[in-house]
Length: 470
Image (tube, rainbow, N blue to C red):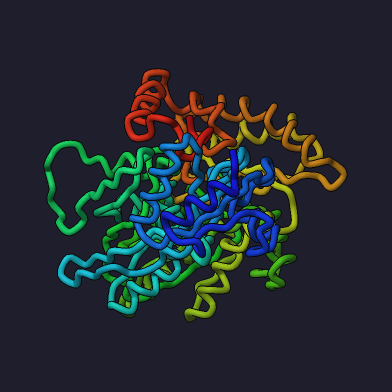
């Protein structure tokens, strides 16, 4: 490919300042490369042309050009993914959505925001709050992830147990297909029974069917007040008992998270936060509740008293104010950053039926002990919705290449175990490059054939995020 020619021709279509070629003096090489990768370290970026569209029309022009010239494209958002879904490793054009970050409309009656897909998730939270509303999808990467990327991976996060996945909050989408066609799925109405609801095909498709450029998201009322309980738990089985105990109290549960002692130690090292309790514990649980009034405050203490009397915990504390809420959340939300910045990590993001969780963890522990001798395991997740984040941490004396080779050899055994217990090999991080060879553990041959047919219908030349998912 003549990359200089491509840069010039794209510049004529959308504006010269929106197109950058590597080593043209416009951008530092390290920054340029960062737009073609995510938080994985398996595949290095390898591309030459980076574009910054500012509108759906810009994106449509870029994709139409790519379609006519048989050039592949990788959409780039906040690059916070862990499945290689935003990696450009084969000379693709990278489309950064970072300049498409504006509010386009607000409907105070329906309670919706129409936004561009490049808006950072935390900024969406702020835009909703300024209008007296609340956008409930939240996770550790909200400060850098884009809403378009969240939708493209059907993100869940920490409050799924109360609010569901992002799919439940998307009313409308604007997408550009692999032929450069623009599809606008109406988001200004709640009821629309006019045939197939195609927008749901694009939610979770990881940019392989079309590039999401705009979204209409539902908003809700903000929680009246929030309280966090942090617990020290001696055994995993107690965690499930604690979760069951929360159902005995009429108090809205917003989040139910857990982490191991290893995860806590890494967060303490990275963030410099103190020990939450005097004595260490093998597991820790964070519960977040919505409260309104003194009666709900009393219920919080009743929950803590009940699980203490049943000897399910060794210690526990209720946050007394918003600052302490934030402190407790740091122990959970700081895990991914603490691991990713300091170590090379092989991540598995999986989900299991809660009733199968304890049996699965027993067999999984035996598998990891036998297969990953000398490796450290960081286990945490959204136990309230059955989502586990299983992180294998590379020993310092092992090369990245050898580390990932060993992990790839063990993954099929892990996925067979997940399949046995009726789980999913990817709960919310997606498939990307890293898990596409194992999709058959969660999807039947018939489903995979149908997915390929859908892919060709929207992207007949397979130029959109090639090699990802399928």
